[in-house]
Length: 161
Image: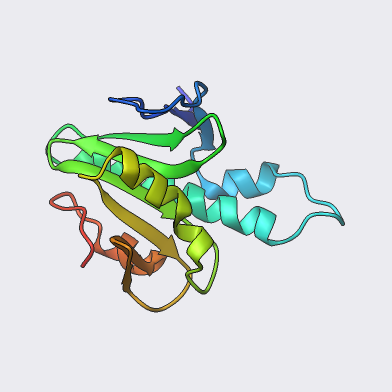
């Protein structure tokens, strides 16, 4: 069997809002995404780099869910009004929300989806992964370089080290 892609379902447990109903699709590898993504003179580099970074994080989180203890599953969260959190991990160790941004600085608007998620799930741990260098805590959200987060990811924990 050849795995070219996979679907990410919507997190709907104890939903307080109307949510999207369709899963997201990810290629099994960001290189396949880049090779298949049409490019032209009207496309900006960020339109390719952002989804590629999100796909890379998706690969790592999917592997973490498979190899960690506690029966974790990977989802995404999106309201009907298009407020979206890229990844939600749910399992015995907790509820985690992860947003990925291809930006060098954390801006207030980058935190808005995670804040909305926190209104519905205040018990969650929230992470913003970005391309900058600083590890920050803003409004209860752990903001950290994507590379730092991925290097710290191990089967025993998902934490903001």
